[in-house]
Image: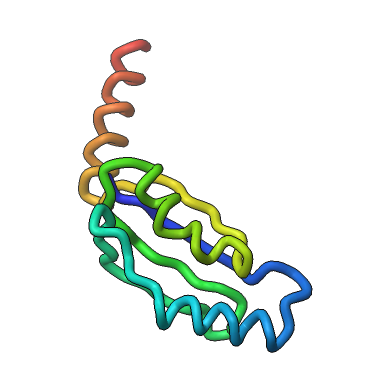
Length: 99
């Protein structure tokens, strides 16, 4: 299952928290149950976004838990655009059939 994850720094961090977050990231090993497809940091330095593949939301929780003192996360399932368009078209057809 694909997940989108956005994150922002927790308020009041300062340089010490930023330094500690970088240290944690440099020493961190991602769980084997999660595959990261993309990871981008916002150009303004206020967080980032990533796309990961995992069997469960719990696996994503495991991947983000190390960084929870530093960042607030939002995790949500996502579908690729072609699949989403097919789903939307089927839903439109079902609604049209109700008329």
